[in-house]
Image (cartoon, rainbow, N blue to C red; front, top):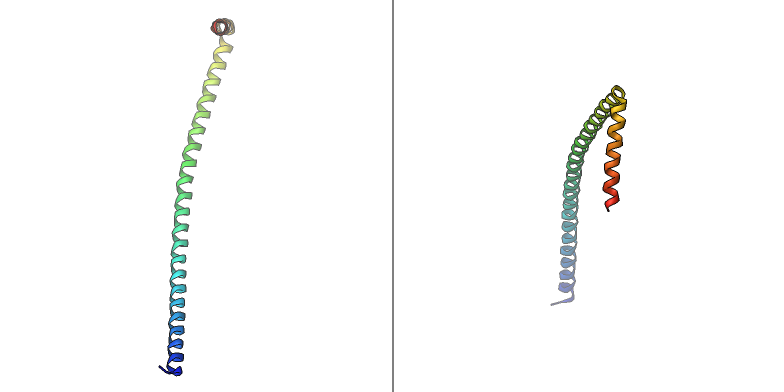
Length: 104
């Protein structure tokens, strides 16, 4: 093999190596683009799922608050309608709780 043949082989190897680098870079860009797209779709799906969950919890909290307010208003009306009975019931409940606490 002459020096010219060796130089030609080296040049071909360099060209092949550059072609491989270019092909690898192209595929890497393609895979990066696909991965970014998949990540964006997953993030969007997660945001949608979380948004629905937040709405569900918010509705539940609103219903619980409304129910609590109705109970409070009803109790307040009953106390105002029968203040002596309400005071006697409160005293009785306090007495029972006090006795239970004393046993511990």
